[in-house]
Length: 352
Image (tube, rainbow, N blue to C red; front, side):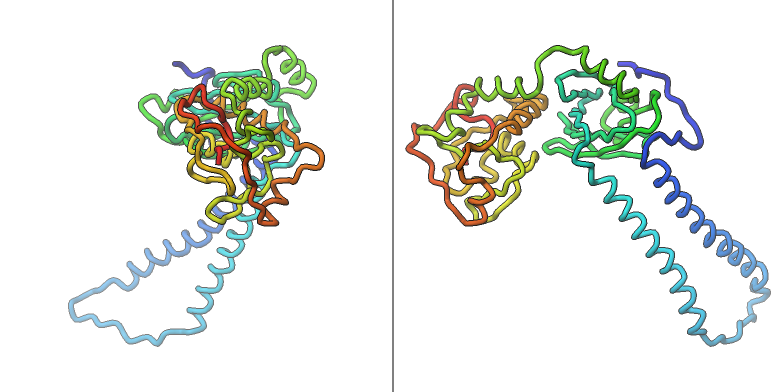
């Protein structure tokens, strides 16, 4: 495997996102404060070492009373700067952790040693990511093996990509062009080759590029998987329901068998597919098999995309209402528990 493009090095990476100037400004402030203290302290150490060097074995320095005023000053001034750093850094951190609701989502899968990207219409890329300029882009990321990290220096964003769960980072590119993307966590012998590029395009060019793909969408692929593994036989309302209804599940509150109430986010759905016994829904038995090793990262993403399209029937009690009211959903009479992970019913939300 070879890098897709030559890597450009520079003392200061180009600023090409809405975060870049803010991050550089904070970094510059940190450097200035560091030098403000480092240079005088270093100079004082050198001066005192020379000026008050012990001249003989009999030298005894005079006793000096401590100055409370001096001690307060050299404690308060650094505290002032540290408080500024904390609140400034926290504000920027929360900005980078809160994507806009209308952000364009791209699924990212890291594996030794390549990056896979999939866009909203199903178009896929390897080690090359196309995005539109002046539009927020959210990367939903997962790893197939070890810890990786998506680092785009020109955008001043980086985030670990973990096996077993989703992580997220977002950015808004401000300049069309091609920018380097690195894996910033050592992930094995070919870590240095796990690089890619981000191609920022004008809005019209991006839409034309996206429209060039006419294959299957993630939602359609997820629906096919949902039917292939007979998930609907357990997870849709009806006489054969043995697991919670998945319509309207994403973002709702779910009451668990252990008494806890959690939000059904994407990580919860993912865990319920791979480890369905981990969080069992109140009112259901833990009969769903694990799909660990049966479904890959792309298939899990597609199932979640399909679940987002499922809406509860008119008049049906919402998951949130059931959780808030402490309602125990009682499943209908069930058939024998599934025994085969491929042909048995269920594949998404644990038949819990």
